[in-house]
Length: 315
Image (cartoon, rainbow, N blue to C red; front, side, top):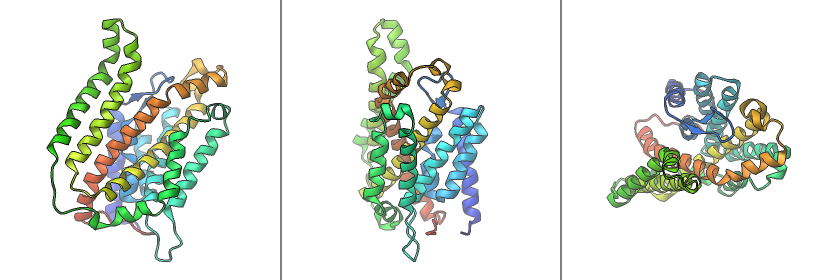
């Protein structure tokens, strides 16, 4: 496989972008792991795989994560964004001329191995419903198969008549503002009012508003793009992001004594209960990342394609 100078340059840019986002953009706190956060470069990694392919995308995301890593845990979790880029990149990789290469198979194998890893742990066997979003991702890969790659590569999926839906965009902006305020102030609001119920309600409201707002803005800005292309980008990004999530879970379990010392001697039932209790938050968080990745992807891909910078190989 020949790698062009353009692809190397894009890989370097993406690695640097991951480092910047990891270093300077506040992440989402990891419940149970004091001081650890989920970086928003998790929303960028699948786009790397889509644009420069699964292999370069993997290394770009990995190198960016390693550059920002400050502990053994963050070094290992740098591979999470790498696997995200790999899965999304393979899903959008077209068959070769012989028709023997099927990129989606590699994505399916990667997600399957991660699911096997989860159920091989005692916690995983207790919290057997926890990987529902990940199983959904595997089913997406198995059902869609080559459809995602075909829709990603077709120029005709992008309409030349661009229209801006101002109502949808305005509604999305309002939802994003509400969600952002709720996300960053729910602890203060709970302390001021003395109502502990807010601690349980406002985070879910924040995630719901952020998700609705993100997708509303996507529709408002990119309503001129045909649904097939948008759906293909969203599905590829989602599958990459849930692969990232499951690998992160496995790394967390393997290092629980380091990242969450109070849980080191806790029974597996307790740890499994924690995982199940945060499942709704995890789902909302991954959907939010998917919305961010989709927004960036459907904006960036047509631009790179027209500029001649998007030349994904089939083998």
